Image (tube, rainbow, N blue to C red; front, side):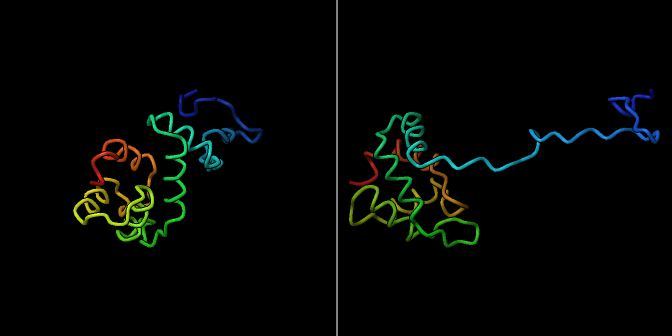
Length: 127
């Protein structure tokens, strides 16, 4: 009547009726997609080989996330890169640049951010 309540409904006690909760608007955790499905989607999006992307996802999943924010220490990231690029050594400058670009020390590693970096640097990263 006075516009204070949008639905205008009243309960049997003369009190404005409560809107039913909307389960769609409640935040719920989405089911985790299996690694093969995730790798297929990301490989298509980034124009990469499925096995290459799946390998990278597995390496990040296996790596320890020892920082309090869920991020990776730089030496753990070095080992991940060594396995992904199949090399024994990664120069410190390249490591620090990639560590900062991929933001893996700032929180849990984001495979999308890594793959964006990877696509740009995969041929020039290891010389």
